[in-house]
Length: 333
Image 1 (cartoon, rainbow, N blue to C red):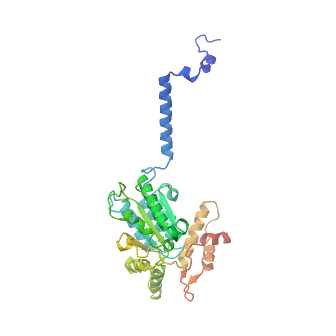
Image 2: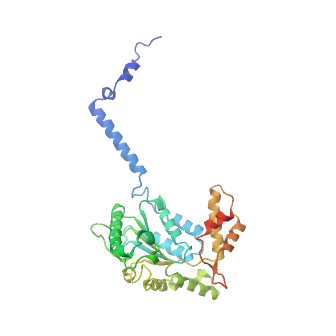
Image 3: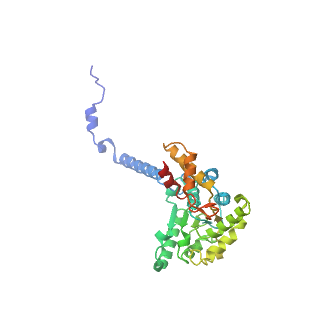
């Protein structure tokens, strides 16, 4: 039976959009669509707010306790420094941390853990900026240009997000004097040219000072004392003086140290055999979660035995820390 009151669907579908909507309605629909599009774009795009930037103190503590080995001093200092800073809504200056120790002891790794527990995107966040001396500042003849570019980069990014993080790697290879160009941004200023830097974080990574740290660790070992007895007071002054007077370091005679703008000099101790085994087991645990076999203690011990240790007679500390663990596991897997 034919429906006499039903609409003519062919005619309805043949109507154009302009026939279906009057100009006012069309404008409203387009405006709503554009607004919705902007909302979706802003939701998906990383922004400097609590949806993308929230400090997780519990997460950082858990990561430091379960993923960083042999670094009781660094773990304690980092957790207290970052937690105290991030809980302060009105800090007087940026947080400035200087991490020191030999290669493979965890300096870069700790920087990553800090970023992962502040920014949703971790190290991939557009608010985390990493500078490597040999890559970004390779030519001594261009130091004046580098100073200007560095100042502009920091100012522009902090203007965009006051909770920005800046990581300077290989400070021991940076040209002396360059880092002084950012001294005003690390100081006790409310604002500079309308920009406040007080909620930003600056992290410096350096092998400089590593010799003093190793000497202290060896003294404790030879004296039959546990490395956990080493306190910050045993190292902080000697490390800061060592890098301040090292003319081959980016910190040589720097005003950052002279004016006490570095909040903490964080020593990373050389790693022993047991710590290397822990590193290997942790890496195998990660691989197991990605579908590989379960952690194997025998393999971890084999990897640890293959590394070079010093001093040559006692063989106490790993020369490269845990730096080559991943490649060694690839060999044994």
